[in-house]
Length: 370
Image (cartoon, rainbow, N blue to C red; front, side, top):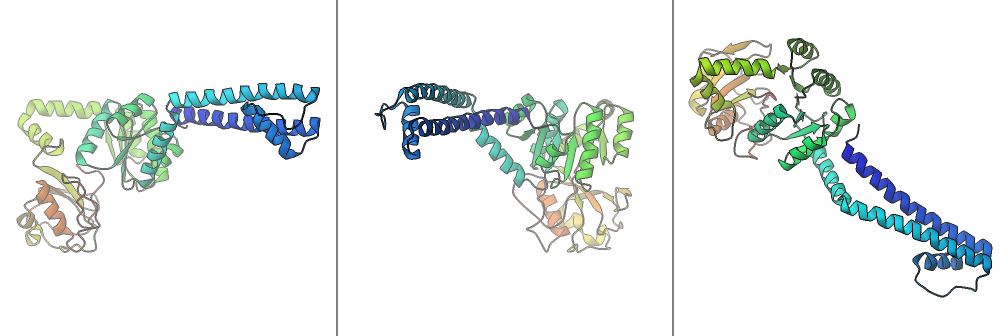
């Protein structure tokens, strides 16, 4: 389903084009009429038709007979109606901002076409707005998809890239670059719609990382069976965090301070080691000296097979395929990224930390960063 905004302006465009075609038809009708009724040449008949429709008041090409005069009266009436309709359509288009919106839509399309390795957020309700704030704080490229015009307008006012459309339809997902995206976050209030979008997205881009919202345990199981990489229930997660805040307030303050916001001094980041330039293949954390050289702390290691090693020791081995979950300042994490891939510090995906536009290493971060 195309967005209602696109449908609205498509209708206006069709009316404008249709009215111009009607005027062209009146011109052809007038030219043919003078040729038949008066026996004039085509050039003379066309000239007479133009001065008649434009009502400039020039003299007739040749004297008209009675049939010619009646025909001229009818031609003037048709011309006035056609031109009046065109003026009305143009005036309405200007008042409704058609031309400005067309330019805006074209700019949006060009912007969407340039997006790559971006995140797609489906749903801009209360949950979606909070997710967008976190994405913006992390400085990652993302686009919002919502079927409601007011939600898209609100997103635009917040300087987000937003597209109005039904995310359950493949054409909408293709328009926001699902084939070039690295992650899809589905945050609609309907479990059925979230499941439908997830299935469509996985079909269009099997390598896409997906995070889905679930309101019930049954929906959570279905979303996981459908291929969701992570399923989050706002109610379950919210309840757990509230309980943790009551039982361990200092721990929660610390955790919140390193995973959210823009003014924090410590960050959590994860590094998926895939580069051919990785210099510490088969080495231990002690011999790699990552902590000493960068200052960042390795909190956990996720093996390629899925095994999670929490609190790795100095003797823990690291290698390609591992994901390192680390904590440190922005500069410490950038330094760690350079250590993990020292040979190509230019062409990598940028760390999602302050200091926008800085790129380090060919090391790829996992799309579902903490």
